[in-house]
Image 1: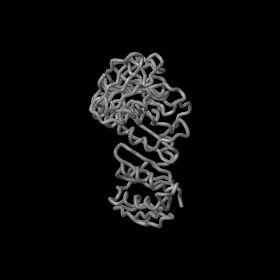
Image 2: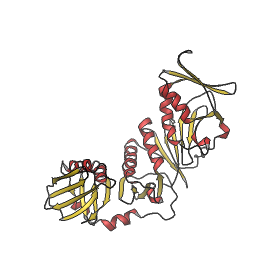
Image 3: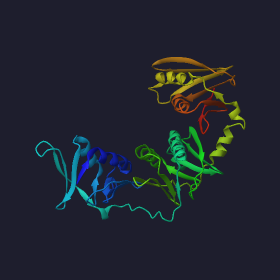
Image 4: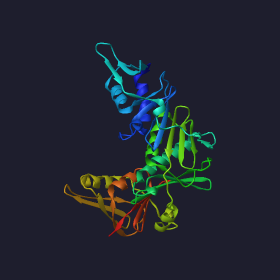
Amino acid sequence: MKFNREELLEKLDVAKLAVDARDFIPILSHFCFHGKTVTAYNDFIGIQVKCATNFTLALQANTLLRLLSSVHTKEVDVGFSKNAVFFKAGAARTGVRGRLPYMGEEDFLFKWPNLKRLGMHKFKKKQAERFFRGIELCLSSVGDQMPSQMGVTLNHKGKLLCMYSTNNKAISKFTTMALTSAGVDNIILPTVFCQALLKGAQTYGLDNAAIQVAKDFVVVSFGDDCKMYGKLVSNKDPLDFEKVLAEHLQKDYKAKARKMPKNFLDVFERALLILSNDLHKQVHVQLALNTLTAEAKSSLGKVKSSAVFKKSLPAKAFAVDAELVTKAANQCDSVYFGKRVIVFLSDTYMHLLATQEE
C-alpha cells in the first residue's frame, strides 16, 4: 500500500509516544496496524491514531521510523505479501528495498476498553485551551518520588477544576472551569500521559477534544483522529494540596503580591549564566525597601544585579533555585514573598517555590 511519507510520519510521531524503548516485552515496542487505525502501548499509556491500511499486523516501531526518516521520497510502499512485509521507497535501482519483521495483530497485548458506559465531557474550545494550558504549566513541577509527584492531580471545587503538581521543591496550581464527566475528581494523570496530551493537542487541535474517566484509567480523544489511554496513578494517601498551600500562605497573600518589574526575569537569567555548570543553581536574594538584589557565584565568576519594584518589599534574605525562578516568572506577572517561600501568580496560575532563609 502506498503512503504519503510525511503524513505517515506525522501519525506515527504521535503514536510513538506510547512505544516502549525497552525490548523486554517486544510487542510493547511495536506499532499495531488494525486496518483503520494504528496503536502503540507501553503498559502505561496507549495511543490510537487514525491510519488506513490494507493489512492488519504489528511492526517494530523504531525500525519503521528509521526507514521512513532515512528516505526522502514523497511516497513509500509498505505492504504484506506472501507472509512477508516489504518496504519500498524510490526507484528500483537507486531506492530502498527491504523486508520487515512482524507480529500478528492477535499477539498485540493491548485492547481498547469499552468506553460506551463511561460519561464523556466534550470540551468547548475555550475550555479545552485552558485545560491543556493547565496541563502544560503543571508539568513544570512534577517529580517521581511518590504518587502525588508523578503527574497532574485534578480536583473539583464547586464550579472550578483545580490542577496541582509538586516535586518537593515547588507546587503548581492552575484553576479552570469544572468538567461534567463523572470521576474527574482526586485523580492523578501520569506525567507521560500529560506529555502525550500536549502532543495530541498540537497535532490535531482542540475543536473536538473530549475526556472520559474510569476507576483506574482515563481516555482523551481528539475527534476521530486520535485517542489516548492512560492508567491513573494509584494513590492511597492523596496529598491535600490546599492544606499545604495554606500552611505557607497568609490569607491576604494576593493583596501583598507585587507586580514584577520588567527586568525581574533578566536578573535571574544573568545569575543562571554564572551557574550554568553548577548542579545546584542557588542564587542569594536580598530584599530591602523596594529593591530586590540577586547575587550568584561560581567557578565562572560572580554576578550581582537588581530589580526595583514600585511598592515596598518585606525585608529579608534567602536563597532560591534560579532556574526554577526563571521558569515560573516566564508564566506569571506578580510575585509574593512569604516565609520560606516565593510565589509567582497570574490570574489562573500559581507557582510556589521553597526558599532557604538566610
